[in-house]
Length: 205
Image (tube, rainbow, N blue to C red):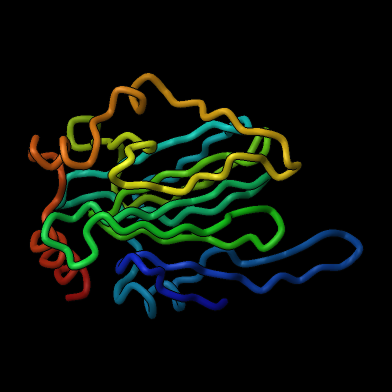
């Protein structure tokens, strides 16, 4: 398994080796060794989620209060999504920066987003199935969102699906009502870079 850190510090892309034969394909989509080498600590798995999305469905930008936050290790088992990591840590040298990885059922990459980062994705194919390994369980009072089409963030979302057909973004009511980045900062919703650094350091011992 190979890995590289994205331009948003604290987010990594993992590319597994795939072993195929006439029966199909086998791969290890998570390995504790490469993960710990990248993140500097083990993954404390507390919850595993799955979502199935039609083409055009946009989920996020989601993040959680730190501590403890919610780190996510994400892959796409079927279909394709454009996965986005966004730095929403107030005081971070890269605050507001975002980076993308295509997660699909061809290269079968995964992305790890450490605590304090925002996460979003756009489904590029019907029935795209995304799997998440999470460091904490769902806690609605500690989880927040930023509108994924906020022009201040400026994510360059695809306008066509994998077949070249136009995409119409579909957002949940909650995501549609989410504030922009500046508004979320003014409301005190965003994690601070200092708090995130301190918490991640505690995971590394």
